[in-house]
Length: 155
Length: 155
Image (cartoon, rainbow over all chains, first blue to last red):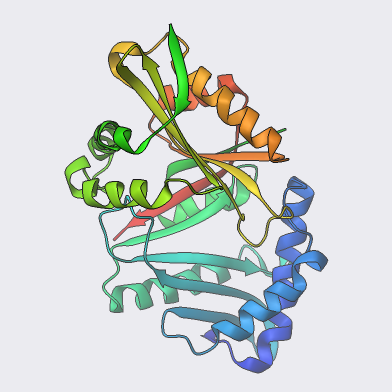
């Protein structure tokens, strides 16, 4: 029985480990991104800083004592060209490879959805690498649509 | 003979007017965006604040005394998952409708390219609305590629 619960300080090591896996996944796509190792210190500092903040929520998926995945979401002020005063932001959502395809990510996302609704959020946003085809199709399945492209030119 | 020159304080009204046109273009695509009118105050404040900053460059395209377009670019610290310490960012580039198709945008962009190169920038980035097909094709022509999608879900 998988439970989605609020992350506690003792979970930070597990979360950072998963976040490092996600960073390594992106580094393999594009060396524009930091590797897990290069990003670790900053990830840990961010996790510690974020704990207990009213506008940040960190969840983990647990099966007995095993952590299967995690998610981090926030409530933020959007860019200044946006009409709305606050948006929900999915900062990261990750399920360990061995536990994918069982709806764990959806369960985490649904908890964020409840949280956003309780805070009167009307817009939920996220960024996904354009080459992460699986990620994009999952977000589409959850109800997201693409509204902007981030483009880059490497000199 | 079109010249690309640094914007001066006296050009702010023209620049804000063009930025408002760009905002209205986006608002027509998606009511997520502020209209030109809703954005004007903030645009003007930003323009005033940005003047003379070493890491921001505002250019205008002029033909005799007529301003045909403008561009704003900056040098910034990227998101913390990015390996590099600084990136070039194209914040806006706009050519008045009547003057499009003559390479004015490209001339402005080339000036930014020179500036970025002189500051040892290796990555130039920008965001473009996914429904702005002309914008996307122009940026591709200039050498940009899509590396991330921004996705949204409206509750």
